[in-house]
Length: 249
Image 1 (tube, rainbow, N blue to C red):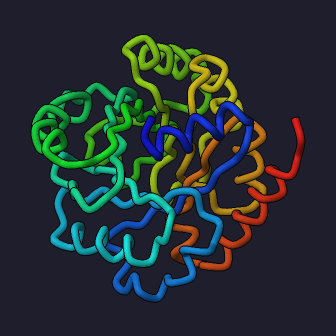
Image 2 (image 1 turned 180 degrees about the horizontal axis):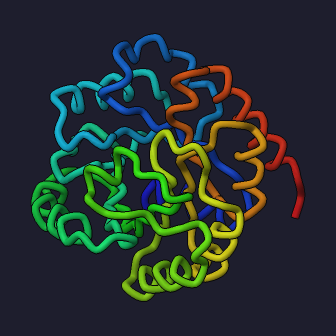
């Protein structure tokens, strides 16, 4: 088993909590200022964004590897063009909450030969966009509508379809900059349905929202915009993680 798979499966099996930092190459200029990251307690660094292709992508991955220390750097691709063999792993995602074939399978087909050539750990990931009806940049790029936090049956059925198709990891995302995160009830329903490592991101802009995600069943939370606006918030989330991991089950 590869490194990131072992991390995610270990969190789920041992009922531990993890934190990932999502870096958008379009929003962060000088990665060297994040030298503190190596000893921060982060579990994973994700790199990617909604922009399909960016000349800064490869450079951002290389810079992150320099400051990451032992923390794995994993690609969170906005398209099949966001690839780098300098990363440790890639979330090989299918946007199963939408019906746009480009993001269900087409980008994946185009990227597959290049991913096979690279020395990347590949994580088959079901990606579901779920929020309160907000249309954000990820929805504009993917040309899909999010599932609703209120439509629990459809969310559950969609997650089950991903499970039965053989996807091993699940990512619930409200979208970058979402005012409200994926609801606790949605997280509970999906975790119960798939019993697989569950990543949750988007709209986690306060400590209480992070706690709600953890308590509902998220194994790994992803912090992006909120950390860019307030670096101290990432430290707060890491403290919350540490508190949860002191609990003996």
